[in-house]
Image 1 (cartoon, helix red, strand yellow):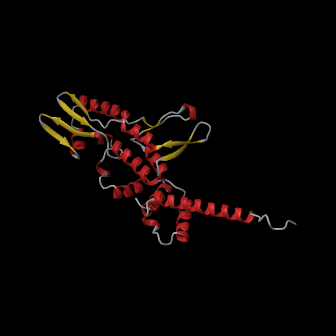
Image 2 (cartoon, rainbow, N blue to C red):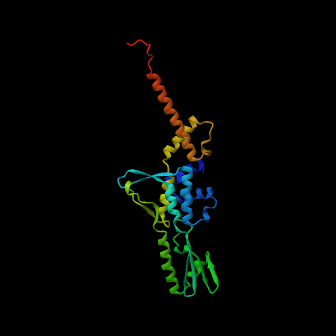
Length: 250
């Protein structure tokens, strides 16, 4: 991800447009669309850590900022199983698996991967076509198990509790907008500060193409510039304060 991509991402984050944000991610990570929601969650947080930095700040119970290492968030997500459930009822075999989309299209049956009966297997778009023809008991059984399956991804611990820091655990539902909002907050940056950074590059790094740099790289260069400027200012002040001991005192 370079700064040109990141500027677009920030605009989507500013407008809470998760769909637009994902279109950029799919361009940057071609395999992204084939992942399930757990692997997508891991990829999005890892990508943020690599290109924007591994730390974030969240507010504790005292409304004070607490620094969180995203590696701990990745560890929590890595513990979530991307498992498939195999169900058998009345001669039917149903396999449920994790969704591929964070925000369901409203079809709770998206998690059904296959339905098998009498050695015939139905999958993909055909599943919705056969659901209404299933025996009532089988249909009811599937609905009950789908609710259990959804609950498994309903309370995923993203940030662990830290009593000493007065920080509560953060649990999110991977199946709804709460996780989408969390991801947007990770990538969001104040546009004023971003344009200020662009201005600094235009003034002080004229031979470097800001938009081809990774966001973290440009922040490091700006940090180095600020440090050098501060040290030069301090040295100048010390030089102005210096008095030659042979200079007559008034």
